[in-house]
Length: 412
Image 1 (cartoon, rainbow, N blue to C red):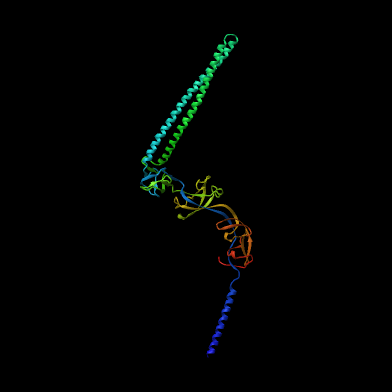
Image 2 (cartoon, rainbow, N blue to C red; image 1 turned 120 degrees about the vertical axis):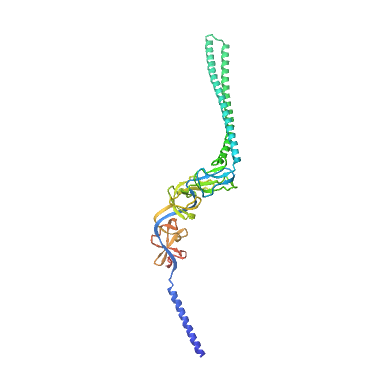
């Protein structure tokens, strides 16, 4: 009985093994052959080179208030974001010492200017007197020359003696010496004038520079130290706190006209020659959830001394809302465009030994095709030769392919 039961179990096990092997063979036969790949169709479209830059939203009409000195703030009457009217007192600064220095500088400048003008007038009078003496000396010289000539004529007819001729010659030599002396004196006086006035002018310029520097401190500030709003608008920033100090390096306040904004970006010397006024660019301001087309309206022709970058300003369409001065902006410039050209996804293009190529799927077979590329942007690359619109180009799995491999297309 046990032998019979063992035989039955052995037979059942054999049947199961046979069924399992048959199932495995069946599964092997349904697995498709070829390398799994994903494809995209080459298409005709416009391709533009993208150049990205970072910028900031600023007011189209923005006024910065600077105080060219470090000063303590004694009172603040507004906060950033408030609206101010022209003439409003934004804050009050302790500028008593600066005001005293300004007054002293004004007195010093007035004194040096008066001294300069006085010395200049004295020298002009001296030179005018010398010029008058030279004119008289020149007339005397003419008379002495005529007298000598007449005396010699009289000597020829026996009406004058040699002594009279010698006397006339001595008088002529004296007149010449006097004239030469006056001319030397004029040159000397002019040299003294130039030297003295140069020194006085240098002193005057020094005091004027000091006065102008102090005057900068007093711009938009009254005699009591009140910082006055020079224009109406929104306080985009306010760097004054009661009891704190303001610095000459930063504006005390920035007033912006919130009705119209602009985008300012800084670009490299490689990009700036490719831009032109009127060019469109894509602008994204993430903090405001805004995306729009900006238009280049100005391009600086001189680079910033520190950054070596060029400022480019773009206008903002009037219907764009929610922008606030100081927001971060991403700007994409489209510098070169190829219209109605064949393009493929950039990831489809492979490179080996200096040659660019793609794999094209035809009748379940991968075909390696050499291509010539052009512009690239927005994730696609222009193909100038090798591929035509509509061909299926491998975009995933091409790294595992060789020319002629069987493939099976999977995915979308």
